[in-house]
Length: 161
Image (cartoon, rainbow, N blue to C red):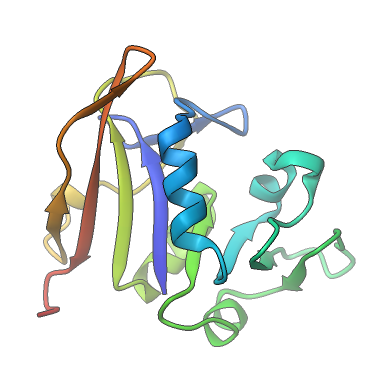
C-alpha cells in the first residue's frame, strides 16, 4: 500500500475536516496517481469529499467502526487488517489522520505535497523526516500556485532498495 498526503511544514493536514492548503496542481496529481486504484479513507474524509460519496474511477474503501455505516460508491471495512487485505501494493491510503496512523506501517511509499508554510491545524501526519524508517526518494522543484509555495516529496521505506 501507498499513502498520499498534502502537509504543511509542521505536517498539518487539515482543519475542521478540510485541507489547509488546497492546490489545483496537488488535486490533479492526486487524481493522476490514484485513478484506477483502490483508495482507503476514514468516514470523515469521505464526508469531506464532493457529494459525500466515493471518488469516481477508483475502488473506495471506508474504514469505519460503525457496522451500520453505508455511503454511495463505497465499500465499508471495519478493521485496518480488512483494509490491508482488500488492497494491493499499488493502492492508496488517503486519510484522515487516524487512518494514516493505523495504515502507515502497511505502506511502502508516501507521496507528499509539502506546502512551504505553516497554518493552524487540528489533524497531523506523522513527521517522516524525523522517522528513521523513511527516506526521501525524490523531490520536485519548488512550485507556486496563488502565492503558495510547495513541492512534491516522495518517501520510501529506508530498507527498500
